[in-house]
Image (cartoon, rainbow, N blue to C red; front, top):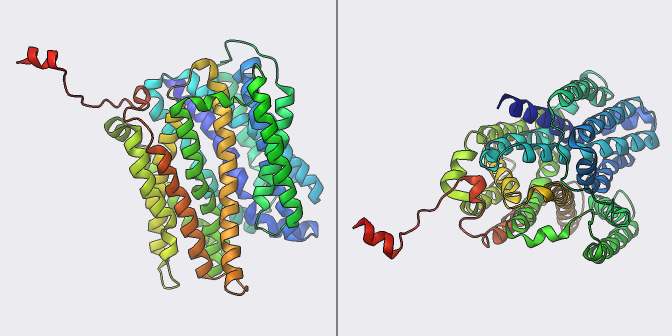
Length: 474
């Protein structure tokens, strides 16, 4: 039990480092641009290059773990991520930091899915809910801590320390990974799907890049639509390739498993709203309410407290109610809290905003834990690595779509009222849209059987006895 806890902590720290780094950079972009003598808008490339790298290399993580063993791949991922962090801190131009962020993304793409795979293969399904609940804390707190931490470091130190703080964390993680991460690997060896990697990798890179920039006016609209079109064509080509390949790098056959299909796709739709929130809330607090980046970051931290509090509740609640009930009812509650800022006005106290984030963080965390656990409920051990890779890709795409949907909603609302500075009415429209997108995930969860994933949740329905049993009881 002690070793399992240590394994969980090592994976959780890696997950926290990766998720924190994905968001901490945003508040430092003006300072970096000033240091480089560049337009801050061009520094968006430092953000999108990281997302592209994740999308390209996540599909290969499962094959590498199955072939070479999770321990060595996890350690190499930490090393690559740490070296990328050092390179980012030493960068002196946009091309340099973009290349360094790509290296970081390569490490992050291998680190997180392989870490989850270690947890899923080393812990019995009956105990998985509790461990998965804690594993989602870094995924929720990283993006929330990123803005205030980035603002604090940039204000009181230098933006380069945003990346250099990963070095001691990476070194500690490397030591503990060597000592405690089990060397799990696939039961069979398969040939690497090179063609599938190219089709899916380039296709996902173009779609993620185009989707991330859609509505943000960073690159020309024609280039964005070209990326989306070509990327979509490559992904369609991959679909036909995967139907013929003996071991495709992304196993589309996983979607024939009902619990996996519903959990991943429903969870992906849910993450559209979740992905939009870290983009919308800091803008609302800073542009409309006039808070500083550091102040707005401290306000959003309330959601992290709610997320952590949920971890003590998830296992007994799932045992009591089961996946289907939780995902439906809790999904509706999450949609309400994600869309609730649409009702805020300029006179709404910041304390009210904080309470909404606190309660919303609690329910969002429960939804994350439930969807992630249900996704692997009926997955065979031999397909676990491919299942984690596929779900990670869907999650990445969903978060990118969420940012794009939020940006487009803001822009359309602003154009509709004649342009100018963003106003609270623009955010009202955006929060309504992302709230409805989150609510749409419930439609998929409604199709779950009532006893879905009972082996993982421990939920047992009280069934009426049959006629023979009833007669005996009399």
